[in-house]
Image 1: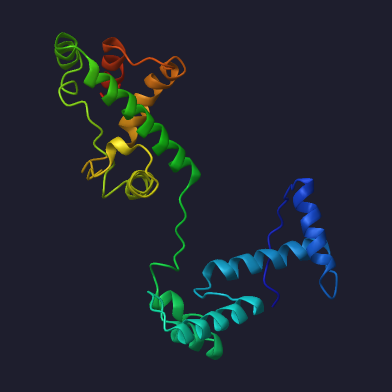
Image 2 (image 1 turned 90 degrees about the horizontal axis):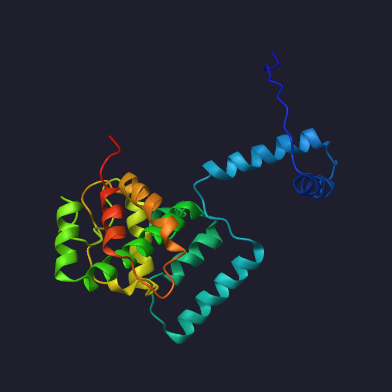
Length: 233
C-alpha cells in the first residue's frame, strides 16, 4: 500500500529558488522543483541525524599528507595522526566523534545570545566604573535607594546550571579575546538565573547608553538601573 502523504504549500524567496534550480540542474534526471525539494529535505534530515564526520576527497588527501608530515617531523600534538589515517583508510567516519567529543560537537553559539552577553557586559562596565567614582555620600544614596542591590554593585556573571551558553560566551570574550578585561579572573557564575533580571536592567540602561559619550552614569541613573533588578510586581 502506498503510504499517505500530506500536501502543504511553501513560499521561497528568489535566491533560494535559484539555488534549488542550480542544484537540480546538476542531477542526472533533472527533477522537478517539488522533487528537488523532497530530495534536499531528505539529505538535510540524513545529515542532521548522521553521527559521522565527513571528508571530501581533497580533505582526505590533505589529512593523509599532514599525517605523513607529522610523522616525518616527529611532531607531538593533541590529535593522533595515525588515528586520523586509520579513520580515512578504513572509512570509520563515526570514530572521530567518539574519540574527540570536544572537537566534533553540534553546539554553535546563537548570535542572539552573543549580542545579549555583549550588551550585559557593556552595561556592567558602565555600572561598576561609574559606581567606583561616586562620592561616599552618593554611594550611601545608591545603597539606600536601590536596596538590597545598591550595596555590592558588581557583575555576578550568569547561572552555571541554567545559563551555561551565556556564561561560556562571557568567559570566552573576557579570558580568550581580552574584551571587557575588568572582569578578567572572575568566576562569572552567579549560581542563580540572571537572564530576566539583566533584560529588565537593559531596558532601563539602553536609552541612557547613547548619551554616555565622554561621561559616566550618575547616581540617579545607577539607582534606576539597579532598581530594575526587582520583579515588576
